[in-house]
Image (cartoon, rainbow, N blue to C red; front, side):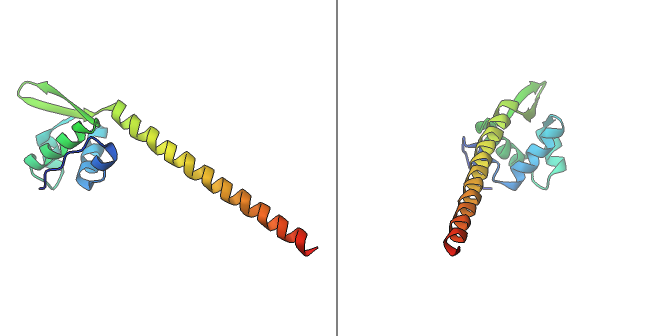
Length: 114
């Protein structure tokens, strides 16, 4: 697996394995071994993916004996959601502007025909 590090949440969730890890962690916190048992990747690969997610601020870890337990970081996930809502709001505003300008343009053309 190619080593990839990014502190950008969007880049981190661009990988399907990392999205699968996040889906597992959305259910409950888990250790690396538990995640590896549920996914078609090795424990070292899961660890690398968790490192990327952690660097992006999307997961946190705690120590339980000799194990590290991972969970989603609500603050990091909320930041991604806020960004997505901003994109969505801008897209809807652009759509609304396009519809309004199209409606205005058609009204102008119908007046010209009369």
